[in-house]
Image 1: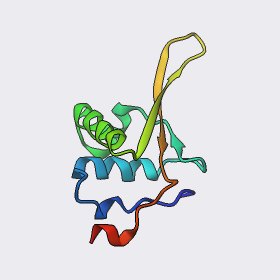
Image 2: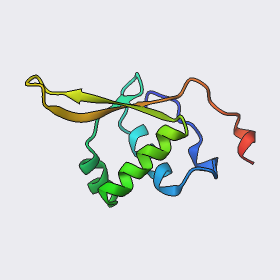
Image 3: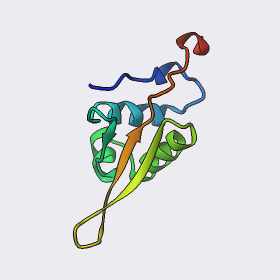
Image 4: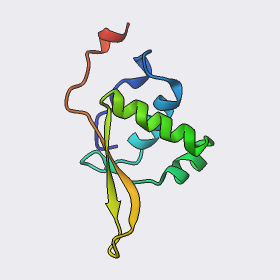
Length: 97
């Protein structure tokens, strides 16, 4: 993985579903911290429902750990979301002890 992982597993304010989805996205990001798997793909690979994945993504956006941007096909139709993991300011590891 090209980006440094935020120690999400030590943050007890974030739900387990969100941690699971975050770690999944960490394994798929490029050097810029960007990836674009579909919600259906994330759900299938993690054996979660699509609604659970959507809730987890919303939790991560609210926590400031990721942003999303709609992607579009050349014909103007919507494609998958682009996920940008936010890694600039890493919390102190001792903060979660």
